[in-house]
Length: 119
Image 1 (tube, helix red, strand yellow):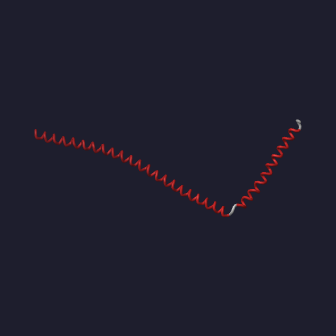
Image 2 (image 1 turned 180 degrees about the vertical axis):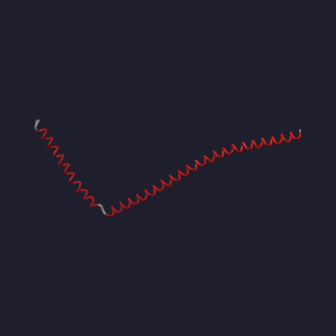
């Protein structure tokens, strides 16, 4: 019994390998038959679909580029707006200071006139 066990395992392995080899030999033949069964119209339809997909992808790539460019322009416009708002605030502070200075000068002129009259 001990001597037949390895022979049986060997036999099973040989049969399995033969089945696998037979299967491998049948697959290429099936592929040849399948290739012959594909009609030229189907190949042309697939080529057309591939070409249409390539054109669609080019269009998508162009739209992505355009969107990115517009997004960059928008970000730049927002940065400029922020800069202009800060500049406007600085100018407003300067104008307020000048208005205060003008009021002070007006007051000093009135006081000078009063002083001149008193002298």
